[in-house]
Image (tube, rainbow, N blue to C red; front, side):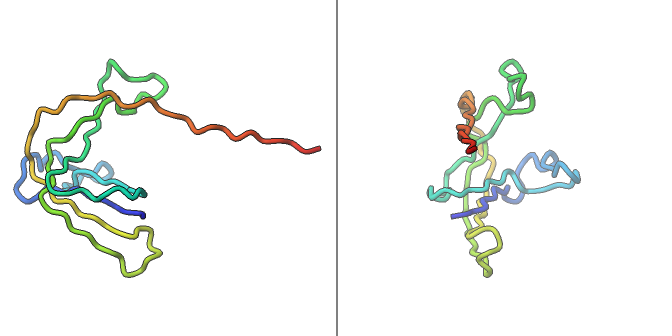
Length: 127
């Protein structure tokens, strides 16, 4: 199932002046977006979306902009709304809006897993 999961800050949450769209600089309540094609359950109340962080001393020179660590974020889901598009071929079978409140925790940083390259398929040449 193709789902678009959007995490949004509830009204009057701290940090609003720092949440901006990169391409326009305009303010947004959007904390994160996930495009999900799995059959995993939807986020529920109390879920914390992951936060991805780059720690300079762990940066791989081959991927200098990649995030190196992750942790549970300081945002906690308080309400979940789901919407099913009227036109099924529009790209998503479900749109999920997760409203979040700021609830700081001291979550430990965890190293991102090793990148895995897809196996190259061998091509045979017929003469």
